[in-house]
Image 1 (spheres, rainbow, N blue to C red):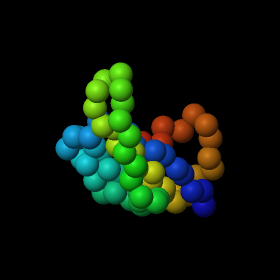
Image 2 (cartoon, helix red, strand yellow):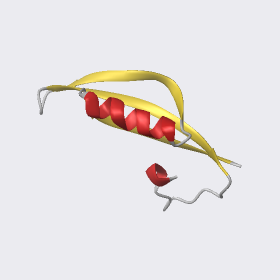
Image 3 (tube, one colour):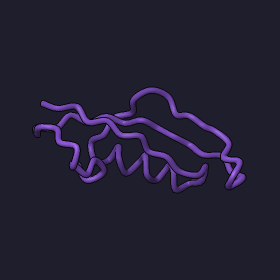
Length: 68
């Protein structure tokens, strides 16, 4: 059993919530609290949320984590 980790980032819009919700619907679990930071280049707030998932596969760096 392998634990996969990924961090979802997006501008602070409903798209961020949809991306996290999609990950949860595919079996990913929240890992820690969400984070928020101001992006001065784009002039917007950015959100981040770490998620983890247990899979029955050996980890390899070429894995497409969002497709697991």
